[in-house]
Length: 111
Image 1 (cartoon, rainbow, N blue to C red):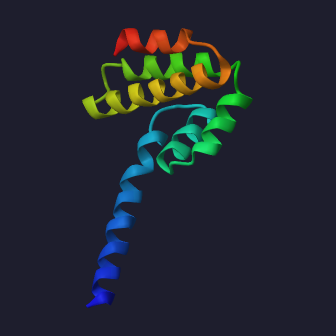
Image 2: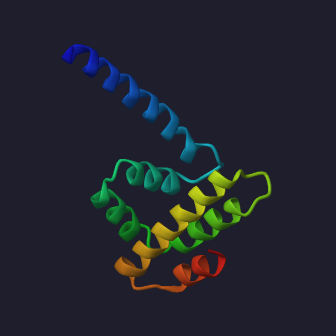
Image 3: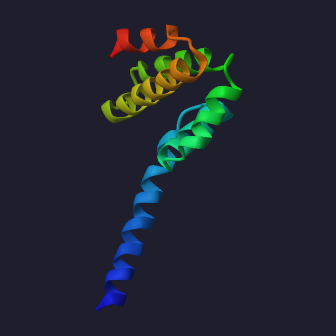
């Protein structure tokens, strides 16, 4: 019985990973965005902090790019919400770690 539960759990986990990983990789995006999104999905907060701190000057442009991608008409509702959420997370962390709230204000005006 335990083996069946383990196999079912392994199958469900594999399916979730297969469905979750392609989402951030669909759009044309920078390495910074891809790395940030993957670490967000994995809940690897320390890596997200490192990315935000090391790319202080690139983050505002990346957030603008996320917002622009989210507002494209060819995006589904789920894709738009995912990209807006990533922009919000990135902007919030940028405000906290780099003391710059301008990108967060920009995100909040859209949401």
